[in-house]
Image (tube, rainbow, N blue to C red):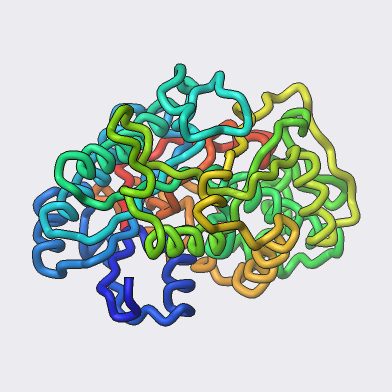
Length: 411
């Protein structure tokens, strides 16, 4: 991949895609193309085929995904169909138009619920998936298997990176949508504002006029000037990957790793995917205390063990990508500091993510959304991995408003 190669980033407004755009630009890549959902509906096969035929990208990063969340259980059929359609359309059009190389993104949910940590690539297909994330896991497996099947049949060079919990700048901070780290960071930030009596900033961030309403709203999420409540015991373990590390890994693999390097004769279709992560996990309690310290909230941290913990522990074995020559660079503490600095610089603008009350029609930031055809709900573009609604529970706490997604669409 040369500096003037034509590169298409699908899903460029999400955490993964936006970081990839930034890192590509920093490294001097000049010919990057993107499309919003209004310009290109990735679920529409005809539109995708026409786009590829006209633009002829040489390299493709498939970051677009319908995030794992409430829809994962409540609308399993739509969720699975739309994720698979996006993948199929882009992967097939990449083949038809002689794309030199493609990277799609998988998830820890691809691996069986019974798999032991750390999760190795060969654990794929070795058992049943976690029930609550089956639709997401199956969709991600389908993408990885389609890539490898095209590689074997047609000689393409399509790879898949599998990862766990992604975080970073341009994350979604809305409580109904956000993942563990963004939710924790925003909870502690708002609690700090309450504790310091910074009412004007709270009203500005929540976009309301009445401080009493704002305070009652925050209490529903376990946020007060005295404490922050988190669901569960806090003992569930999680691995976190910063979006800039994922971008760096993606570019490294695009430039240095080919299917032939991974292929073992086609004996089993499980060779295209490569785990990427940090190889280090933390309890939710450890993460919460780290966020609390970075934000500077001096109140109490409370766990509610009467509420459910999040889903199974997941830690990636990253020895394969390390042997290929890549290692993560951003520690969790440093990554949280980077995310909080970005949040402080942008949170007063709703387009930065996380502003405003949640409603049936507005759950995410203006720069990460596009109106659906039915206009029933704005949707969030995100990276290829998000957490289940259970993970949202552990971070958000009381009265978690995970709600059903309707007619969501992707840029």
